[in-house]
Amino acid sequence: MLDFDLASIGEPALDLANLLVHLELRAVQGHCSWERARTCGRAILDGYDPDPQVTLRIAGYSVPTRLRLAAVYSFRPGSSQAAYDLLTLGLGAISHPGAQRSQPANHRRRHTGSAHPALNFEGYLS
Image 1 (spheres, helix red, strand yellow):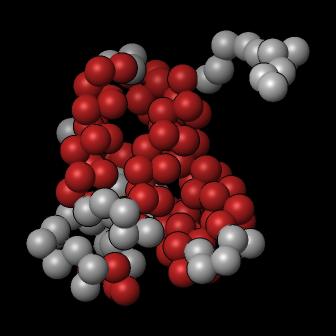
Image 2 (cartoon, rainbow, N blue to C red):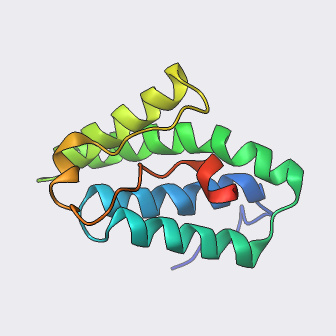
């Protein structure tokens, strides 16, 4: 059943950040490479073509989105490492805003062919 009682027009930057962070989550979980996640993220942004005001807000919404997903995944069996990695990425973005972040160390081995950093919203937009 779908409940449309609270359906409304959403904040585009929040929706884009949520989608982009979910791509990051898939890379953290090893379901895709960091390169594929970045390629998909760029394609999403190219297709959506957000205006400059929306673009500025994407990175800000990505931090609470990472923290929310880290909380959700911390309760799922076998997902504690993904939750920890998202938490680390989210807290890293708070303590070093705009800094180039590295992908979590334990996932570098999983994706040895990718030299891409963890999804960096500034990197999507360049």
